[in-house]
Amino acid sequence: MLASCASKKPPPPVPDLPVRAESALPPFIDIPDTPPVGPAMERAGSRWVPVQWMELVGFGDDDLHAAWNAWLRSCERPAASFEVLCTEVRRLTLASSQEQRQWMRQRLQPYRVETKRRETDGLLTSYFEPLYEASRVRRPGFEAPVYAPPPSLPRKSSWYTRRQLETLPAAQAALAGHEIAWLADPVDAMILQIQGSGRLRIQEPDGREQVVRLAFAGTNNQPYRSPGSWLQQQGYVSDATWPGIKRWLAANPDRVQDFLWSNPRVVFFQEEPLGEDAAGGPRGAQGVPLTAGRSIAVDPRSIPYGTPVWLVTRGPVANIERLVLAQDTGSAITGSVRADLFAGTGLEAGDFAGRMKQPLRLWALWPKP
Image (cartoon, rainbow, N blue to C red):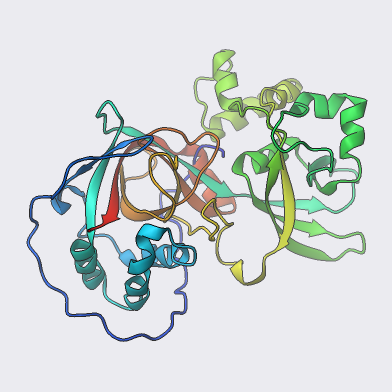
């Protein structure tokens, strides 16, 4: 996934999702913020320390309805620990934010997410769903292919690198006939691969246009190496945000190929119709559509999929204090206090994601016994 981007304004709210009618919840009890009960929880990749709700900065101010839509998505494929609570989550869809907050305080225990060395500060980046113009057939101006997985692609062992796929006759022969579409810019094709999904506005051979989604379908099992970090290591840029990278590429068109080859990892896609999910994002690793501004990619060794998380970050791109859902992961998203915020679809989301790289603190919200 390409690290980050967010315009100064937050992503637009996601429309309400329909829910089935159910009986009312029991009355809410305005419980005091009592000291947390129980020891720290040791995860494979992190340490969770129980805390009081008052430690969650901004918890009383968040408009929880947008987050509730993301939570409803997680309840389509709930983790075992949250399955019982999902019935109540659905009932609370039309409740006020205050009622939703009170329910969370009754049913969930906040845990501060730390490293094994008890460090609390981490890193927030962001990713997005690109939208590019494309052609179904190769033609002048559209000569950068994106591929479906070829039959010879191994499942586990490494395959040709990006450079080899573009230069070796045997590799090119293996890819022939598996082009999904052709883009105008090879850098855009790699951004699509780094993000792991995207949308294409494709012109068909008969002149028709349609918008389709490309979903992740595999890789060449080569390691991901950040092209932005490569530029920094070579001493070419000090600003490795996407705006800084774009400026360097525009000033050095003869080095674009080296820039692309610095990342040996190639992602393959499968084409999907947008269908009823056109307003939502692509499906994340949890298997549910992502929600702009409310879904995060995490290291699942630190935070399990489907976990509601309180996220706090402050910096030059955005100040954020909000409820999010852990619904995705990525090859570059590793570590205890690490998250990648899904910014949405298109240019504005891409601008936000390309600039976002800020300090982060996380609190996992886990069901009480």
